[in-house]
Length: 230
Image (cartoon, rainbow, N blue to C red):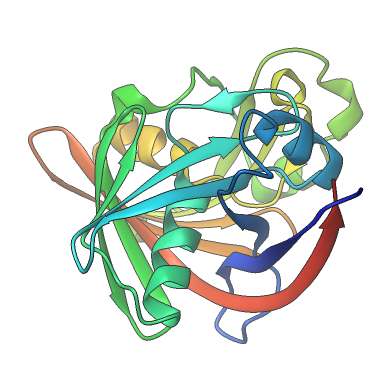
């Protein structure tokens, strides 16, 4: 007999009007999903799908696993931000997300969620620094056939404002709408707070917080719940 699971879909790093943002699928782990996480994430097709294994300590920590359509990630930014917001929204807020890479500190204020992470947890990106936002916008996603490439240009260097896009065929993602891990890594690379406009119009804010860590955050909104048949 086929089984069905509920998949909550939120959009992470929306703009001020709650538009755009990167879709995230959130699944509560169960016997039905055990050992099928990659299969489910591939079928769903979101850039990342999170499986919430358990709230280890109510009000304190939750364990999660993150999958792209092609692989499991030890850490990812937009899934961490989105899951932190979702847990708070359903009145089970936590201070820490336990991920394979390490413990990710989180904080949620209304629709804005923040995480604090280490840049060494992020995937290796090829950095493509371009001359103008128009150069970033002109890129063809299908021209990138390997690895993870993060293209960016200054909108206003004095204000730390950046235009960016990210292409990750190695993860099974043609183009990622908003990439928190890359924002963490780029902030560490440039050594300053950033305001990143990525993809179709998603907003990511970052700041270094000491001992090499980076805080990244933005707005998350509920989008829909779907039933997936296993």
